Length: 227
Image: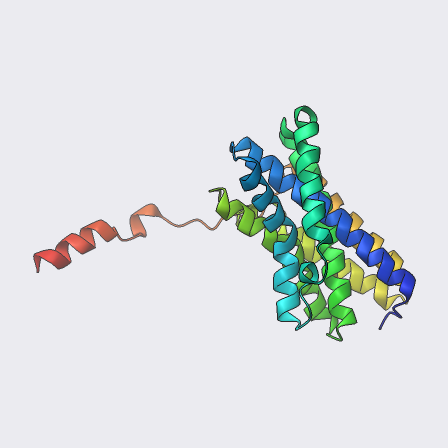
């Protein structure tokens, strides 16, 4: 089913994108603060977190990169930085704050990724993939820049939550309900799964191998030089 896109839908999407930018920017800036970055470094981390996924999405679906059309998103990231500075005691301490903003940003960006891809004329399966990319790629770059293993590649229910949200969006569209209901259902699914996974300690299985079966590269290099 193809949803009919109206002006109201466009406005709602912009609101979602701004809210997602705020949430992801704050999550990135909060992590940068924990790593003792300066203000500029924290702004860069917040910006990369907020625009990374949408940038890759827009390049892949051959549309104008959203933050290059208007400086609004750069300004929103700046406002997010000063919000963290002013309310740092409440926002910087504790992992729950980071988790909350990350979960909200993830959900909103999955929705916006799916919607924009559908509006660009792509099939639903492509839209779901773009939703996952929009929601997760900025966080991947953020974690790499601050020296952490990306959350996307750890055992946390992260990419799986994005996928589940995308599938719920698709199922609601099959029921011929409005795009608004699909967006809400998708976002609630993503946030709900992230919260449930954290509370119940759900995690994907870790790919385990026997350490003894892994060749020692140092020994192999030494043998090569001896020969």
